[in-house]
Length: 369
Image (cartoon, rainbow, N blue to C red; front, side, top):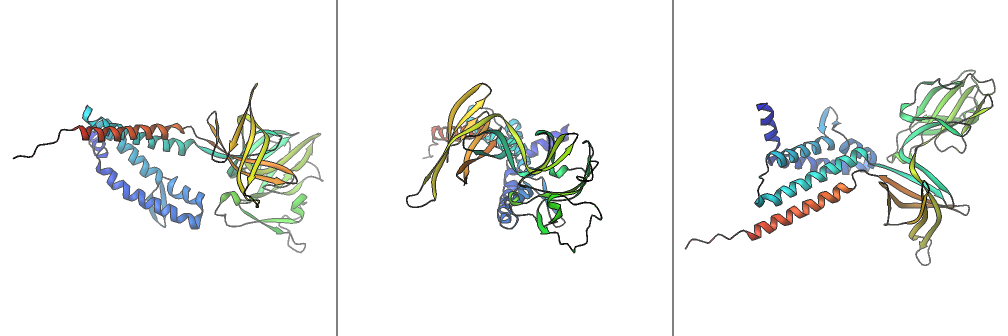
């Protein structure tokens, strides 16, 4: 117990910050520079969203580890090393505000999700899509039956009335033409749909994971001679793969991971304002209706003026115009710790101002004559 207190008191010392700051600055510089070659997402995952990252055989502390030690230091300093008297109230408030900022950052890192919505003018939807994650969806008569993350696809799906065997997958695929003279890797197994003329070869991931084209090749067995065989599914394919069994229709499709809001949005009107004499967007906004159960009310989402509702923040990020149809694209951020940075900043500012006020009120020492 005595040894534990000794370690706790050491971690509570102010000089721990001076040891941690150079490491944090070096990590920030390395992660920022690495974005040029690795891309934003990969650099963030490697340097900032990790406890340890490897440079060759050398393990180095990541953002989670360094900020975790800093959080422990501030917590112990606040609880064990604070002088609980009025003259130190400003310093104590400042420490508390900094601690709340770190807790808010941790909560954001662990729970925040950023997705997007695409809504056609005049239509209603509750669906959001992930920027990074992909999934395989199987519908039975237009009802979702299975939703499997791409990274967790099993070798065999045997819970259906037929069997699906995953032959190969690629997170970023290159589509190549299946040559007639090319030796058939599947032997006498029949090829269906795009698999008749298309092959998938893995290629290096893009710097921006959103630009990756995921795909898989799978084998169906247990239906009939016209449907058993090899199929190719790629992200964003124009139509799902359709299979039939006992008058039921199975739709198989690969795409961005989908989730639902606890309410829905209807896009009434999309408005784009252009610079005079050009088609370049100066501003754009969307008039929407929020539908939450039996409740409905109008709202507007504009550039730099997001909409916040039930813990979700909607940003007007982009738009599409094609064939006379307009679509709004919203970034949707769910952040349970959204208020903590504001609270922490207010407390920290109040602490600094109180500390300065206390210093100014101290009686000046008279010089000895």
